[in-house]
Length: 445
Image: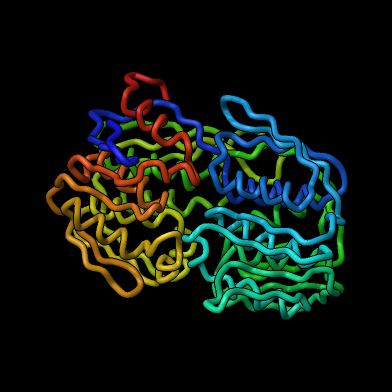
């Protein structure tokens, strides 16, 4: 594994993968913990291991809003001390969300309650992401909010207007949209009910209930919140990110000589769809919950993934796709290592991510030698003959990680990524972990 020019990196097959890896803190939980404590009463400490650029965008946006934050850096991560308040300082504020759609959408909900105007903007990639889908339910509650002509960032919110609780039916199954509505509804008059087309992550409900909000998930698709309500600040050590860990689960499942333990992960059932998929395809993978979950709203534990098993083809469609949305480029690589032809459908949301992830994944799979067809809402892929390839990441961290894993696990020949640095959006220690996993021998896991 070597660095090239212009941010390029050459990744080669590892002879074995072994060891114990600790993942960066989970982005979904981290964003919510930072924002919720910023608008809560009291003080809290939030510990984040190896936070990527997206979480740092949320921290800088909260600072721009006037939230009192103390940030202490260490070699392994950061500690954020928050002095929260339900009444954020007023005035006109510009928030730079960088590449983070989660920051933008969740903070849009928060900004509806503060006086003055808030403009949320980001980089060129974020400006291509759809934002009317968050503006529509916030307008229905009484917020004054506008987006660009294309329905994207920048978003302008003239806050401080009365908000009303109401029933929402969101057009897509999105935990980000649900959280944006919930953060606005904390200051609305009356009960808020949110219905989604299929089940989404419940990090928002778990965290806010832990902080004292009368919020609950009813079944798989409805969230109820009695508002207005106030939150009590609570300290949290944010557990490891299952989406980052999925890279190593997939790598170990594909590689014939692999055994990896991934420690301290968030084991929220809504985040373990990749474990279920790997088991369905025949991989050897084990989840070990901690005996004590600790002082936090989420279950925590380890995952052990081993290689050497024969992987079977799979057909993915319907509600399962939403539960795997962040891992789908990795799933494409997994499919290329399985027997027979696998298929992904109902994943058109991938075209609206940091890149068109259907197009970029299909192009990458074709480049590494897999048999692949691009579909309107997914792909069809089967094993081919691994070959050396140059991969255009389009600055997308998920694409870069997926095809690095393809190379290190042997689905591809040598792979050169044109932009290896983009992994820092979500997983800044990825290259260190890859080197450690490929270099360890005989570790007891």
